Image (cartoon, rainbow, N blue to C red; front, side, top):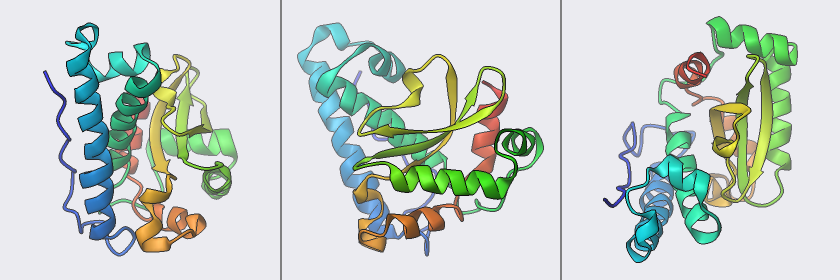
Length: 196
């Protein structure tokens, strides 16, 4: 069965003024849809891939199939990492884990900003939970994803591929990441932390 482009959990203009409708129309409607189309074409051409879930494809493939499957997974996770009602700071267990792991929420933000800004080329910045409940920040290049790792659980991500921000911020990744904090979906991150 072919994969479909998942609907955004909000309208294209819902993240304005931080991320424009034009960006989401291109990012979701062209880039994400393009990964889905290429993945479906690869599955159609290789019977051994048919019937596998997206997670199975991410975990068991390489090359072009992995790149497209992982980008479908990463983008779906990214859309859920943001909300029109997002921003602010987390509460509850996740807030305590951030304080314990980084010293404070402000220190966590600084470290995340540095990681997101320092990712060379295209990639992602992630907040992940370790098996012991402590937190870490990791970056991945291109389509790589911590979803392939058994030692961490992804909690939220910031897409730092240039197509995520160029329409709105040109090449100013730092300004985009600063704006992204106003959209962070802490309920999504908390739910991921709770089910790790």
